[in-house]
Image (tube, rainbow, N blue to C red; front, top):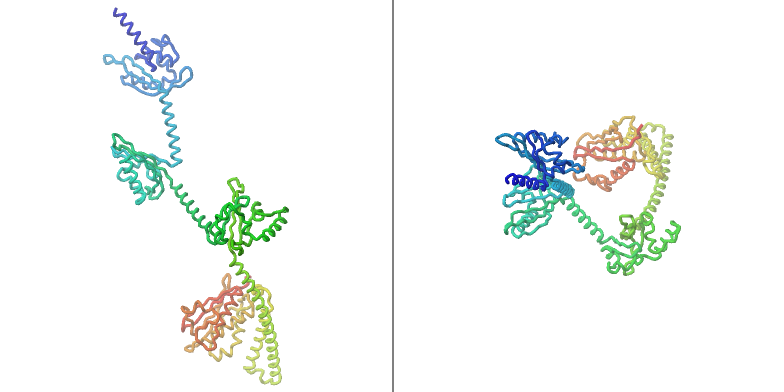
Length: 632
C-alpha cells in the first residue's frame, strides 16, 4: 500500500512539473540528467527517454556548454548560481532565459544540482522596448533641450537629468541641493516667479508653467521654461517633479522679431513717407499713417475701396503707359502702368505727382516692389513714396544759381580778358619807353635803379603772360600744370622785391636745391611766393635782425616747401580757425587787406597741394606748402 502511495506521489510530482512553464531538471555530480520536465524537453526538442539517465549536460548544450561551464563548476562546489542566457530552440526561435543552479548537498557532499530555467523573453522584449523609448525620449529631449527634475520633500533631495545639468552648465557629477538650487534663478523677477509657483504647488497642488531667466554655473544668463507639478499623499505634498527646457534661442529670436516688428511698424507709420499696399489687381490693402498725413485720406476711406489711380494725375499715367508700351511692345494701361516693370523683376523708381483729397498736388519719388509668397508668386505690391517738394524747390534754385553763376563767370572771364589785354599793352609801353630812355641816355644803363626797374618790368610782363594763360584756360588747373624749377621761381620772386627787402633790412635765404622741380601754374607759383615774401617783410620784427629762409624736402607724394621767418608771429590759439579766411587780419596793420592768405591757400589747393602753419607770438612763423611734383 505504501509503495502504491509512493508511486502515486511521484506521478503527481511529475505531472505538476510538466505543467510548469519553466524548465526543471536534476543533474548528478557527473552532469548526467536524472530528471527533466516537459518544458525542458520542448526547449531542446527531445523526449524523456532521450534525456533521463542518458544524456550529459555537455551533449545537451553543445556550444553553450563552454559558456555555462563556469556556473556548473561553482554549483558542484556547493554555491548557488544565477545567470541569463539566450537559447535557440529547435524551431529557430531565440528565447531569453534566467537560469538558477541549486546544489544538492547530502551529508556535506554535493550529489548534483537542480536546474530552474525561466523564460523571460517577454520581459526582455519589454525592457528593450522601454530602453528604446527611453533612448528616443532622451534624443528628443536633447534636440528640444528638455531636461527632467525631481524634488523629494521627504528626503530633501533634488535630482536632475543630464540635459537639466547641461542647461544649467554644470558638470555631469554635479549634485544640486535643495537650499541652493533656487539661486540658479536670476535674482528679481525670475526668482520671485519661481518661488511663488513652487509655494502654490506645495500648498495647493497648482501646476505651473513659467518662463524665467537662469544664471548658469558659468555665469551666463539664459531663458528657460520651467514646468512643475506636485504629488500628494494623505493631503501632504511629498514630491515635486517636472521639466526644464532651454528656450534661450527661441526667446531671444522672439524678442528680435518683436523688435523688428516694432521697427517695421515705426517705419510703416512714418509720418512723412507714404506706404500703400495693394493686392495683385490694385485694390488698396494697406494705407499707413504717412499716407494719411500726406494725402489727407483716412485708411478706412482707402483700404478695400480705392486703387492708386485716385491719387495720380491721369495725364501722367497715360504718358507713362505709352512709354512702357513702346518698351515692352504691348499696350500697358491702368494699374499695370505702375507694376509692369516689377512684374519683370525690374526695379521701378519714378517721379509722380500725387493728388491730395483737397485737390492740391505735390511731387513724390515712388518706389514699387512686389510682395511674393514662398514660391515666388506675386500676391500684391508695395509702393513707398517720399515727398520731394523741398528737393524740387532746391533743384530749381540750384539751376537758377547755376545760370547766374555761369553768367557771372562769363562776365568775369571777359573782364579778365580786358584786364589782361590792357595790362599787356601798358607793360609793353613801359618796357618800350624804358628801352628808349636807356638808348637816349646810355649813361643810366648801369644805374642801380634803372636795372631794378628793368627787372620789375620784365617780371610784370611775365606775370601778365601767365595771367593771360590762366584766363584762356578751359580745363582744370591740374591738367595744365607744368614742370617748374622751384629754386629759380623763388629767386625770381625775391628779385622782384629786392629793393623793398633792402629798405626793410631783411635777409632772404634760398636754401632750396637747384634740382628740385614741382608741377604747377607759373602764375600761381609766382603769386604764392610773392605773397609769402611780402608778408615776411611786412610782419618782420623790429627788435631783431629780420630774416626769411626757404627750404624744401621731398616725400613720396609732395615737395614740402618750408618758408620760415622770425617776425612778430600769430596767436594760433585765437586765430587758427580763421587764418585762411577772406578779409581776416591779425596784426592791425593799416595796409592789411586780409585776402592774401585766402588767395594763396586756394591757389595751392587748386594745384593738388595744401598748406600747414606753425607760429608763435614774438618768435616767428613757418608755412609748410605741399606741392605736387612729377615722379621720374
